[in-house]
Length: 73
Image (tube, rainbow, N blue to C red; front, side, top):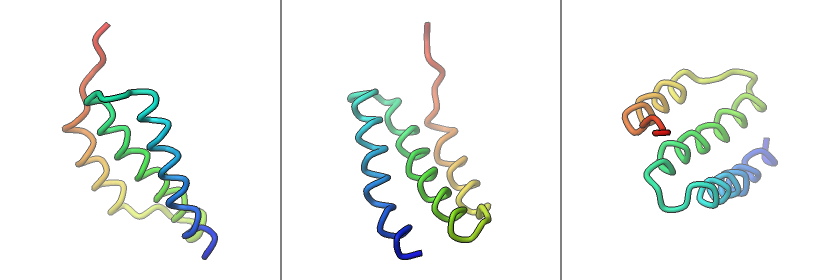
C-alpha cells in the first residue's frame, strides 16, 4: 500500500508530461489531464482495494464532459 502511495506522484507527473508533449498549449490538454489524474487515482485504488469508487467516476465525468470538444477534421 505504501508503494502505491509513493508511485502516484511520479505516475501522474509522467502522464501530465506526456500529455503536455502531445497537445502543447491547447485547450484539449485540460480534459485529458483530468482523465490522466483520475486514471492514476482509480488504478491505484483498484490495485489496493479491488473496487472503483463511484465518487471518483462521477466527479470525473462532471469535470471532463463540459470541457470536451470534438476534433475538427
